[in-house]
Length: 349
Ligand SMILES: Cc1cc2nc3c(=O)[nH]c(=O)nc-3n(C[C@H](O)[C@H](O)[C@H](O)COP(=O)(O)OP(=O)(O)OC[C@H]3O[C@@H](n4cnc5c(N)ncnc54)[C@H](O)[C@@H]3O)c2cc1C
Image 1 (tube, rainbow, N blue to C red):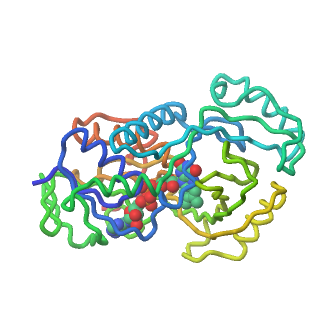
Image 2 (cartoon, rainbow, N blue to C red; image 1 turned 90 degrees about the horizontal axis):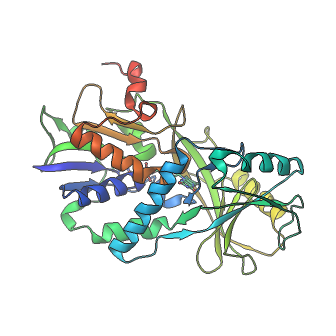
Image 3 (cartoon, rainbow, N blue to C red; image 1 turned 90 degrees about the vertical axis):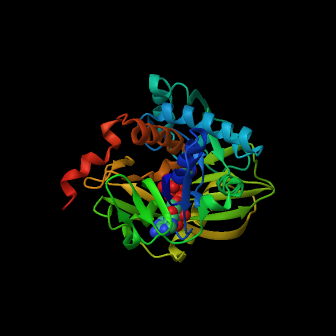
């Protein structure tokens, strides 16, 4: 008998499996990468909400732990998946300068928003209302992260197949799936949860995001640019540009509307030439109250959910995985704000 089956290999599945390796537990990951959000992610680690100048729930704790996690990952596998990088937040109106100055004086934001507003024009930016610097932020290289971890697993640890929920047999002390007998099963399927017959009563929706990959030799790779969109440096003068937010469109297609929106934002933001290399989509698993959902199934104790990572999954997952592990192995409770119990009235037996 193994300790855990993990369904889904995005940042939730990866970071939970990484924790299991540290704890010397046996596991198998079952994944079919149809809607992998982690792979599509802008992958910025930023605890601030720059639209409202606030900090996300427990943002500093998540950020601190995530940085430690990615550095540990780098040391373990001798690979570079993490870069410290600042964000230049450009203002579209002069009024935003005042909002910034007020926010940078708040205790919760003082580690992130540099109090200085920079007013001089900055080539190649078209917006003329200055900018502020967000400090202590970072970015991840998600493809390299996923590929590296998978490469280092043994063949027995990873099954590249769609999980068939109807084939799961549930017993009091364990579950059975094909040849696997496991003490517990953890579902980390991101937006794939809609097909999960045990947990699809939960209010987790898919939030579509379209983004572009551009090439622009004259754009700096030393910082992330942010106005109403992000411009995030990748390698070799490629940049991730996004994204849109659409709850209504559930199709896997990229749209002309999304493309035009991103292009017009880009053209009003920078003045240097760029070439659009690709146009892509992804879906974020978002909960009604914008908090992750973790915990045991209301009826079957050994079925565990780990989902709802929303728009900041790369930052949240490392600490959530630690909490979830302690909960499943030592019954240690975590914050009620992220517990599955907050939606127990939605479960119809
Ligand atoms: C456009 C965009 C930009 C983003 N930018 C950022 C950002 O800058 N910073 C940040 O922190 N976060 C960002 N996010 C959010 C972040 O990517 C997500 O919160 C996170 O990746 C969710 O991870 P996950 O492991 O829960 O799901 P996923 O990464 O989606 O992984 C789930 C996996 O399970 C598989 N699966 C599902 N059902 C089954 C099944 N039945 N059988 C087998 N496999 C199955 C899926 O195919 C997938 O491979 C962004 C997301 C998008 C879409």
